[in-house]
Image 1: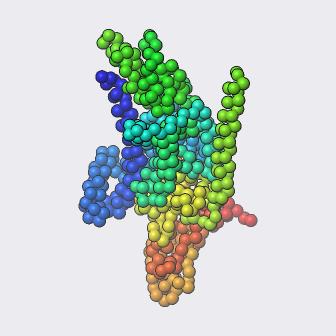
Image 2 (image 1 turned 120 degrees about the vertical axis):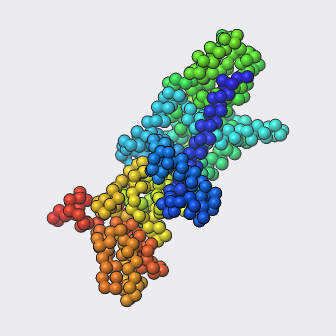
Length: 322
Length: 219
């Protein structure tokens, strides 16, 4: 079938999960360094903390030694998605950098350099952070699976959709709040920030599980009342990514000369935000997740929805086949 | 534009402004509420308490990077202002002053320093140790000296008298808390009083450091 369309979906899942793996690994790095400092021996770690911990310790040691000094190398994976160090590269959520500047009334060059990467990605690839990296979006997608299961079981949860998009206002409110209360407000406002902090707290034994409450609340809303409400209507990160991403190179485009049949709305049903690529009204809210590309029965209709970068390749294949 | 869409736009704007306004208000109230009360022993190189709370992005990098598991983080019980910021509990694990936390801090809430006697004296001012002579074993003829043995600046930040009685030289003490951790008396007879300003006391050892220039100016 459409392997070319399914492969990007697989890659997307891998990326989404790898963000969670990063958070887990970065959190586990703390205890690992403590063991390294305290024991510096897999056998000792195994004896004191348990055999499996000793094996994990040794595994991590072996992997890190490929990059030179293992303790130094382990510091290359550090922190949280909003201010982290990934393979030694510092990344900062521009929202955090802006809040920091507002609160301290100071410009931190290092912080803004770290914030450059997300902005560049948004400029080139649009809202791919939302669809390919955001841990909250992954949670929401799991929530959608649950919702579909409920519908299959015969329940009929309401499906509220609203065109009122308040992301920019939430961004403004959050920045106002951060100007007095500090960057800590985003831990409660942004579900992806709260979720990763809660995971970190869970791994390191800290008492931050309360941070998982906002995302739990939004998940309930998403599953039972209004699918996509947070991401589409309220998320401030999604909002600014959309503004920056409106010039992006990567975009979902409809190809094919003739119109879709009026009866078909599979792409709209597949879209987590209920957008309509069929009428090409999906931009700029579309975040290039590509779910509709898979959903479109193109091989029957001879028409497909594809991301424009891959379009040339896929298009060439199509023409060969026909 | 039809009247309907104008009204809709106005409604949306009003709703948005309400959302932004209420968020700002909640943040403002929480910010006022969360004004730092009391003092906290922060990781080495920390700015003054107010500046530190402003600069810290709660990314947990410092606590994660600490090789000795010294740095803990507050939870919400400490109030929104302090929540998820790092602190050091000297009596369970004093700071070994390795400087890893300050090196990874992305915002400069912890200023990096060189992990040497000179580096500590130049830029670390977490607090000052205070001896309670009523409790201290050495001051009661039971020679102990555990705190002196633990002090990374022994001889500079702490001197010993007869029966190894600890004498803290306050202006040279960086407040790492290793003495408090080492103290054999329970409750601890030597404790670190956290420093709120983040600046060393005037008159610290070492002649040519900018920190000292101000202090040494004639009044």
